[in-house]
Image (cartoon, rainbow over all chains, first blue to last red):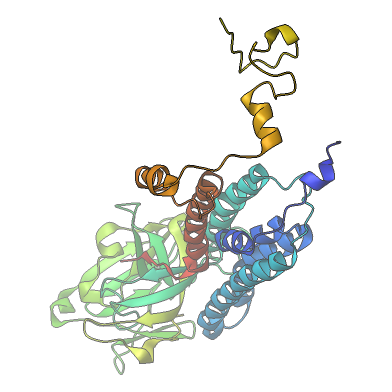
Length: 300
Length: 102
């Protein structure tokens, strides 16, 4: 009686196995079912199209669409994941007389899983967070009333870098690395760029001799068509401060001028340490409740 | 002196017992094959078989499970699925996990 190698490779597909494999990594269940091309497309759609591509598009569109597009990308990713699980199950249930291909071994599945789930997916997410969009949580009140304590914001990371679309401008609400502790990020408003002379006289801030506020609206500062609200207390009336911004640096102030640890205390921030520009509030909560009205608020 | 080589299968006449007729089957096996299986003694079920049932409580009506072949691969797959789910969920919601900016 002769051995039939082809008969040895007839192995019915198990729907539970296919579904679990797609749960672990979208596309892996399709690989188990022998659908090589479909496996690749599902993984590509899941890993590259759903989140990174939509984030690239989000930064090209108005800032008001940032949060909806992030939500859309999340929903699309979840949808592709669920589709992969269900499709893996359904196809496997039909493949009861399946002849496995030579490459369909546990070693191949394990290698694909390790490369895709532990290398490609985390690297893709890190790339999006580093170069496209990153969420930040604001624990301090230093930027009241523009950015409140308890706000969760999206920041544009395609900012202040070679070939980036946006450069640092005066008036930007910027995220930067805290000079005194490089493990921390701070959020403040950029007031001065390299070469600027910053003067603070009482509650009045001037840049190159041009006052940002006016007597009629002392708490409203304006520069180059951009306006923002600030907060001072009576103890600041005796302020007197003047500095010239060094080359390659920026001068930053918190909008809550009396309660802000900013360039007046820790000095000027290297421009290379400014990593993002605040874009939109996607969630906001105070101690007692959720501030629904702030969700979707633009910041720059 | 009679030699009873009941377990031997030799066909040699000199091995056959002297008191064994020539036309009689030579050993018990041949006898069983020609005469058929003997009846078990009375009460055999009540004595021998009942003792066996008491001493070996294995359920012979249940087919033996191939636990070694299915449990370990299934456990490995479940553990991998759990790790994979962790990675996948981390990827999906990674854009909603905020960094603190004071």
